Length: 292
Length: 292
Image (tube, rainbow over all chains, first blue to last red; front, top):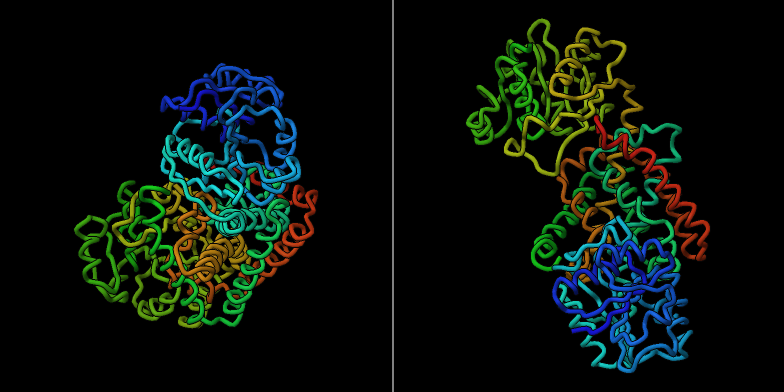
């Protein structure tokens, strides 16, 4: 049972965790913190939080668990505001999509890797945002990755693990570098392709024809491209190296595929497409069953 | 009212047209044709067709409308079999995803562009295939593109238009080259990116980790990649030039985006992502409302 949870950033991610913990009777009091009074009042009216304030330093007072769910670019600022304000035994965790940059921010502010900070990332979300979009089931059957360091207190890790498991998630630990590579491959690169495709096609013509005939394939891509530009800028900046490496690999793949198309090599195409389908079918049950 | 419809290739596309015309009391008799007796019997048992045969030349006997819904690579063979077997006043149309190659096939077999052949392409479909997957609503609120040539009989065009409008589609006419470019951009290129992404990531590692963390973005891509390798090989071969041109444009876009990421140019990234989202939002209502 978490006595007092401070949620810094009461949006889809932070709001859903608060709702989920409440739904599971796993939290006492929830304090919300953010930049917009209007959103905080809305969160309170919705029952997502009990009270709120706009100063992270005050929000974390007497909190035994703190969840930082602000944009990547704002995390360092939050660290700076909570420095020295945390209760004894308080544990901090976050939901940032990139771990290396968050840890670097922590080191920059705290001068070291704090033992009470457990870097985390719930692999969940929708294109929608804000506390209105939050719901208690968001984390059910989802995966959460924790990237503790050697300095991280094992008990802190356990408390964060227990919190996420309580709301239905499966928790995995991995190294920071591995997390950032996996996410570059499975999330960041696909989003770059979606943005790139929509931008490239938009530049093609002066009318909406491209979108008019956008059934199936393109529609899926374009939906992804409606994600927040600011959030994705932050992710790209934070995970620049791993993402650049993935883009390079993908570029090589597309060169190979493009060459096969240009020279009309049907056999090569069958090999590439067949491999992709086989891989997808090998694992699709793993994706859709249980933890997805 | 179509007196007798011959459907060559009774799968998702052909089967759904038959079902839709029946549901709208717009067809008398439906003759199915294909390679597999088992599938044809199934189609008949499902009530999709009234009778069947395996010889396209016999199937089109006395048919006033013929719909060719076989894979792109099989169309020339069908043309060859129906040559000289068509009824007076019979009109032929098809559902091929590429129009240039289909017309080239017709010229090769018939020695000219037949006035009674109306090249067509219903922009519809799912990843599923076969007559079991067919359903009468597939073409409701979908777009169908016809690419008639100067040689095409206007009355033939009108009969094909009327047929598709009867099952709920909006029919547009455009040139062959424009169709193949638009489809290269909105369908073929996105599918190449999906296949390329899945293949590239599969080659990354020896375990299924990539797929295990494949929430959101990657899952959409991988679903597209489970499409038929043979069908997509045929499309790539048939639309090689337009698709190669699109791949080149996309490659330039990704080079620009990758460079911005590598040099951590947040402003450039915001511009690209913002442009993509704005374009998508300008047109998403156009996609989702009415004809989509």
